[in-house]
Image 1: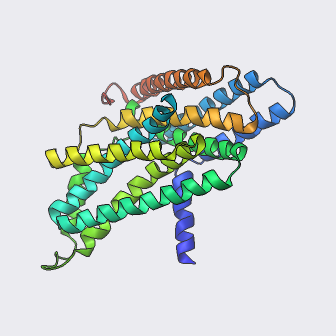
Image 2: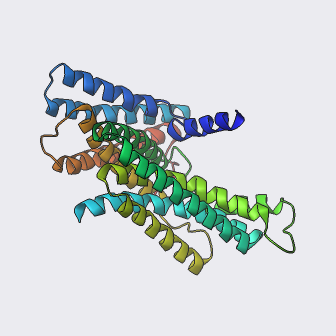
Image 3: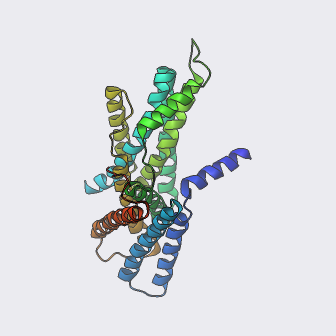
Length: 70
Length: 255
């Protein structure tokens, strides 16, 4: 059981690490993109929003990191 | 040919960065403990990585449908690319300490000198394990990139060869200079690889959720330019914010 826990912790560190927003953010952005496509929005706009969404996620992480390094 | 390059280049660059980090550990082990055991540890670590790439890469290609594969791999590349890029941005801006191979080498040597003495005959377990762990842990990130890039484009071999070429290059330079490779611009390489991962992640995950990119493969170039420009702007903005907060003593960060 302990190796399973260790593996779980390793996987968590590998994917999430110390910035949960970089794990959750892309998933939320992709879910929103999928929803917008299902609602009939044009692919070109959804693609643009996907690009902007990724930039926002990165921006949030940089701002949070700068604040915590203060 | 272009596809081969697109698959091999990110794996090559990522492998270059991680191989430099692994080399620092192996050099410290070899110099302080025993070269023979350290080399066995390196070989064992590389063998395990090769098995991981072969097993997971093949399994993913064979058993995961292409639509789900693009979404899964694109999503993972986005997550991983964002981690690499944001860390590189913060390091370049001076908000986070850069990897200092000379310092890591000195710390590793100091730590290894506190271990029990090297046995007079036979293999040194400490040297083997530390070298094995160093290669395996640093290499896992490369294995992940090789598997994701290789399996999605159906070209696992070029991605693996790109990574292997970087390892050979770093080992060759390491043998010649016999000291940690502190002049490799690790942060610049991590930034470049991170931007590539985000670019391909956006493209493939976008296709996975159902986006048909109107500009086709040209979208990759547009995304790359967009993300790289935004990243450079973020470095400038973060650096300006730090200077405003701490004064102009924020160190100049190159590479």
